[in-house]
Image (cartoon, rainbow, N blue to C red; front, top):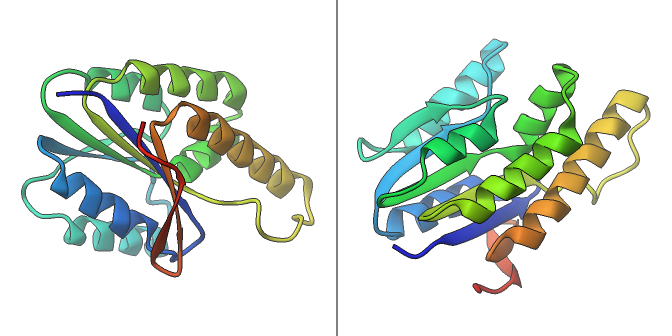
Amino acid sequence: MTAASLFVLGGARSGKSRYAQVRAETAAGNLVFVATAEAFDDEMRDRIARHRADRDARWRTVEAPRDLPATIDTLRGGESVVLVDCLTLWVSNLLLADADIARAGRELCTAIGRFDGTLILVANEVGLGIVPDNALARRFRDAAGQLNQAVAAVAGEVVLLTAGLPFTLKPRA
């Protein structure tokens, strides 16, 4: 299988997760969903349950709330189609753990570059709204935006979803 990476960006409820899942399911290979969300409250537990219900028995789920580069490395090889949803939650997890987000982002980009198979990554586009009114929110927005730029640079294809419509920002390499 040739390596292919797709980066799917969009705002909240833009259709990015659904688009990424359809793209994964049309690719040939073993489907693996890498979840970065952690269920700290009922609302998030409901969201996770809805996402799980959208995937059928073909999918295997792996949880990676913080150590995403190592998880991607363990899924290399074979006929893997790996969907990571989402990088924005991953950045939030790292920020709350006071981790070195810049270093983690570099490690993620390296893991993307060496992945053999199909790798699809989902993230929120965070730079289109107003400037957040507090330092933590600004730090989060900046970290997520910087990660999005780095991942877009190494991804073979980048698609932006708006109102459920895909716009190709970077065509397949």
